[in-house]
Image 1 (cartoon, protein in one colour):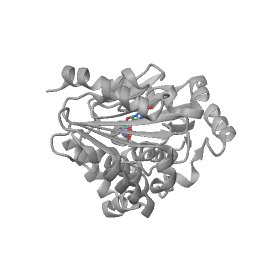
Image 2: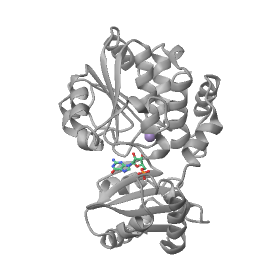
Image 3: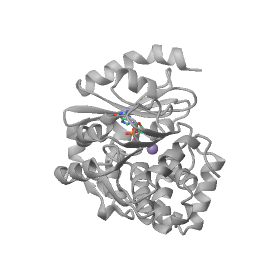
Length: 341
Ligand code: 5GP
Ligand code: MN
């Protein structure tokens, strides 16, 4: 049940690299989501069981709804302890880069990551950079966690997957597939999920821990955004949501509170592109979602210093919230003409 994207050459190289006990760090992207956390914590625990001295080093702490995950308590976050994070990272023999494919995605860890001489990329985003020595990059894989499962199978290490590791990988697969509903969900995704259930994952508990963990204020922020800050452009099939720093503050915003908001726009009939703009410190953070063949990663990469997947991408802008949205709107006619149906 391997993945076609896992090249035998790369696996052979990795096997050789991990033939004896190694110091390993697994890292992931800034503002880690369920897949970033699941793939990283799952791989760290698997590598430990294989005899390596493995550590998870995160650019920053994840939102509360991911802090229950097995192995999180042992992870080091750079926003809490940059010295320890850099020290661990640079002392490692091998650095696994999970769920990202460019050095700028790891925020405060970028310099250390760039200095590390032996990186292994495990990722499913478009347009991988050549930052790693060994690459497992599969844009067809719905999640990096699924790819980690495939990798463990290819390494002949499936037997190390216990309930904790399976729970991490399942969480990554569940969150990145929108609970098994996005187009990236394949028969293979379900087969991997089935094996993880056989390893003891409780799907109800994972779903509940991740999805039913809102504060009251988060739900009210969603209500406010939907009632007052959602702009629907029926002629273009576009929905735009915007949240200022003040609005976020008024609703006691915590990191991760706006996760999933951008998807609501796509719930409207005939909407094919949904965008969320929110002020975050000095920048405006942008989330884009689309249906069908509309490549929002292209829009993010070309105009908003970002990237991602065809149907889910993100980026940022250093202009004001209003100026960013205005620029976005001005790009739409050409973009939709060129890539629309
Ligand atoms: P989200 O909208 O949930 O923040 O991100 C959606 C997708 O876009 C994720 O796959 C994420 O990795 C990617 N993405 C979000 N923000 C950025 C960014 O600033 N740069 C790049 N390269 N990708 C991003
Ligand atoms: Mn992912």
